[in-house]
Length: 270
Image (cartoon, rainbow, N blue to C red):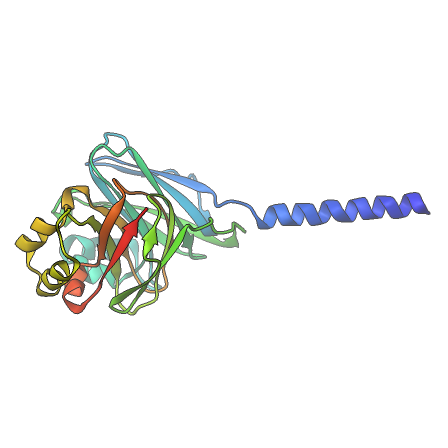
């Protein structure tokens, strides 16, 4: 009897441990390879929905930007692609922009974890160049089954709420920052370091008035970082970031002039 009880206890503990291990499964990784003229998504078939890590790799180490989004119900891939070619602003309304990543010149890779929607058609867009007609679009799909992955541990959290940034004022130089768009409009976050003698009040005035020349004198855009790509409402991204240096930064959304409406925040990278 004691032997039987012991076996049952051990078996129960094993089941609990297995359950904990499954609950703590890290997000699966999908590699996205991008060059100036090509884009490849390393998905051999439909992906399970849920948290998924996208490792964006620049094979030629040129500057690159990739957007990832799910087509809204009723939108076909052909219709979205046609809209993207002719009117990118219209195309934004046709998809949930769930994440993405940009790479600076010489940067080999960067990773972001986002939550894939179930039973959806996704598009990955190579935003290289200024001509939308040249942007390459690659599609992949998700199933209605969840992968059960848990979120990465975030070193800091930032919320984009309507036309304001909320949350952490200190960001890790090398770590994971969780961004969530809780507002009604698409937003992104560019983090630009302040030059040594720049005053925050002067930077704020220049941002509100959109004075580009003054901003270039006070901010070092050559060392800026797109901390969060353009995302639509309810998107959550875990960005694996490495800032070029420590110090004072301003985090700003320039999308549709949001900076002139006060969407910026001064932070310190440590």
